[in-house]
Length: 307
Ligand SMILES: Cc1ncc(C[n+]2csc(CCOP(=O)(O)OP(=O)(O)O)c2C)c(N)n1
Image (cartoon, rainbow, N blue to C red; front, side, top):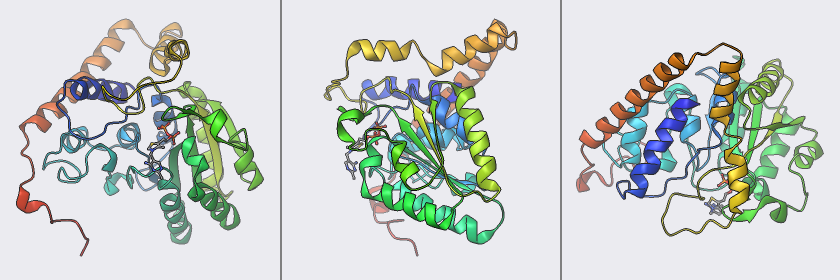
């Protein structure tokens, strides 16, 4: 959780300083979901992410240097600098990719879960998506197929309550997201997505059930993002300021740290040393990105099609 937070904070600073090209969607505020779910997944389990995907990449074990280089558009990045923030994938850790098209990860993860079912090695797939994606056709198709084929698929809805500036409460005829998976006979649990222990517990029992052959499970995690839809000076944030402040007080990172300190599990010195270690890793990733070369114009048509 803390690595995601520090990595993202560095990005926020650099984007607003004008040093990073392209769109960057910050995951700050939602870290407990990626961390709480991915803790239960092995490298062979596959995940698919969305446009706010850095947290999932980090939680699944992607390399910070290659991530940072990709976000900077450098040749040493995951897509040799041609993809940017929304196209980070690392098949070696089971991260099948982020995606700029809302809902597009859902059919991909359905295919990954189908492959896992056919392979019979006990692996599963998990897909992360926002509340906005629940209004896409692909969402309903994915739920239906996962339901009838009993696919080993964990749906993780990160309900941060807005799609850009449109409230989920306005955009969804069903009213509550959980009604939709239940209509497809897919078991569903709604959790407080800012409490990493609650997410971890719910994801743990969901993953155990899926591995035993119980079919898909749907986890709705209620949360909030701290930044605008994407990091930009121009984009207006129409969410109520008081609502944002209220959710900042429910910070997933600070509240977990407080719990651990109250329980005597973490000392102030230990918190400092963990933090310093993470900051060093983020700085190393940042230096690596800055030192790396840009792709050359003659590379533009390389890697466009697989051969
Ligand atoms: C198919 C499609 N429609 C619209 C967009 C533009 N768009 C990008 S992100 C977004 C909102 C997504 O909201 P949600 O799924 O709740 O995720 P959040 O950004 O809140 O994390 C929209 C409408 C898009 N990229 N793809």
